[in-house]
Image (cartoon, rainbow, N blue to C red; front, side, top):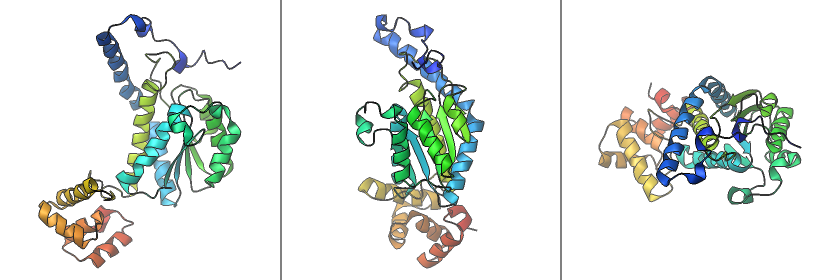
Length: 297
């Protein structure tokens, strides 16, 4: 029988032993107080997170991918972070992948037994043809999910860089990853419900990994999303505002550059700042590896 009694994520929280007898105000207050501990716990792991970010940047620079793999809440968080990279950073749909035990059906519903199925992880990663240029990040609050551990083993066997994110110290999963992040947020308000503090910590860490690595490959200029894809009316207007703010020009002039650049925000910014034509902007971007700041000098 699996022994989980030693896991912090399964232990009881002394501050919430009478959870069912609390008023709504008391309940919200204690949840808020517990949530306030998460950022401090994540801060303790910044050196480990830094290593994972650097490895992810390296994977992207080698034309590799960032692949998250997890089960349950952890898997859903990976899928969410991967999906959000597409509109935020204009990435191809396969650059950041979220793999979840049980497949798409598991995003909304629990798939019985999926997280214990190590063979399933191998099949899922085999379909992605994981290789030496890729970075595979296993996510598991307990740090011992068989599906995730099997996925990490498969990734290492095929030469990929691997990392793990868990919410227990000395997590079993860490032994199977090149890099490990172990964030201890303490016992949950609701015993064992790792969608709470553990889930919040994992979301914060994934935010850091994807955002920092995208900045590292030139997807951001200053603090602006210059690779945003104008796929709807809201994003078209946002693109124009980004050009206006980056080039310090009014919105009407930004709209002109937007049209001249055929909706490419980076090129429009370079054209506006350097007073050059589209062809010159394209050449500068090409020689700078797509990094706006480098293209300006």
